[in-house]
Image 1: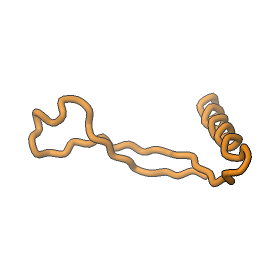
Image 2: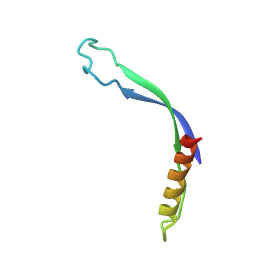
Image 3: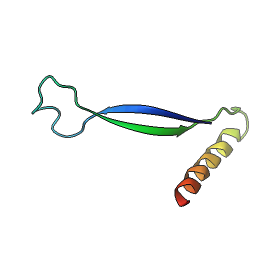
Length: 61
């Protein structure tokens, strides 16, 4: 499965010294992979390896 969402992080840098009282945030979009596996055996590790391979294949193409 994959999820797409808008995310917000506090802006890095001078920590608002020049903009007192204003929240400065960085907005970005991201896609996350996730899966549901059994805790028994190696299912979760196998799926983890598959998700890493998915990411690598995506960036190679």
